Image 1 (cartoon, rainbow, N blue to C red):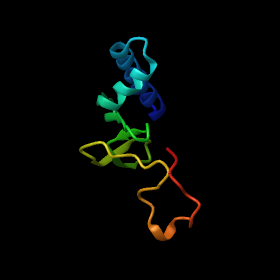
Image 2: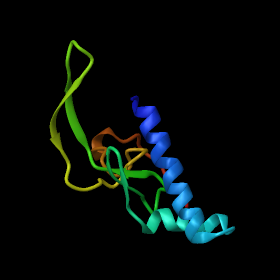
Image 3: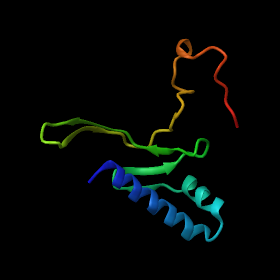
Image 4: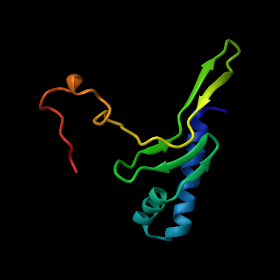
Length: 103
């Protein structure tokens, strides 16, 4: 089973749960995903309210020659996403004056 399949499976289930809760209100589906954690096959999944990106618990693994992964460690909780590295990029590495937050 691929990561793409598992992620698509989780996304469809999140959307279905949101639609069941929100009915025909499309914005309500996203609001539900932001408020509700989903137990996905790869661990807890939730949508971050500020960025609309997935909050995932990290998994660190080592790939073996037989195409299997040995999980070395798992995060206990989802991590807040930083999709554009605006929070985690060291100040010295940031391009001066070219990045700005758009809301």
